[in-house]
Length: 299
Image: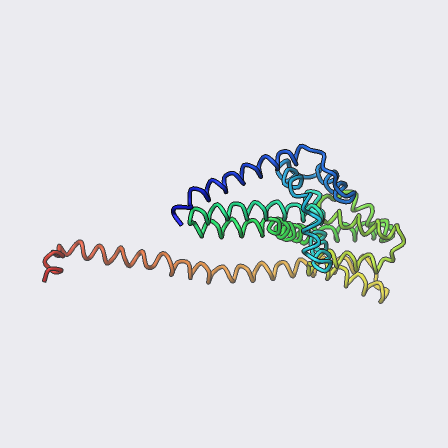
């Protein structure tokens, strides 16, 4: 194996150089892409960073292959997940496939380099990075978006209740309040209002809002709103009650998290501080006793 190692390293290095040159040419050249992929690349380029745009450009020719390998069911599930993430940076299913292809090729090439150098750990790490890098950004975006929506929703409901109490209809009040809000929740409201403008019923539009956001507070808001509409309850009172319940739930979750913090801190202290303290005490006694360890060990 050692005799072939220089030749293998030279082959891998040549492959890496060839891939880099081909990637630069591909990035700069006008590649003939299918219309949907070309639109995804053009639109997303105005919303993403330069690094992500370069990765998209390199991986876009392989995006159709990745989508075919994923299958229709997985593609639909991934598209829903991207929607729940709020399409961060103009992300689409085609741009996701492009990033997965680019990161995957990078991971495979670097894993070959690691195996050639007999570094199995490095090969495993880069291979895992290549197959999970495109997923990590989506998962983090979903968590961040959910956290922002749940923090914004109670205050939004209070303002909406005040506007409704002033005499505006629920639809007009939503439009008025959404104009003065920014962020993911305002985007969700605008999508819902746009669907209603296109003829979707209010119940169906809010069901779609709940589907796009896997959040307990959003589910509570939609459920209470639909139940209040069915029972004929005043919409302003319903909104105030929803906001109160959400704040109560947030307070309970905060107390629950605080209660979990104390045992974690105790376990951390026991696991790290106590052994070090005992070692320091034992070392102090041993050094203070002036014991001749040479004579003890030699009998």
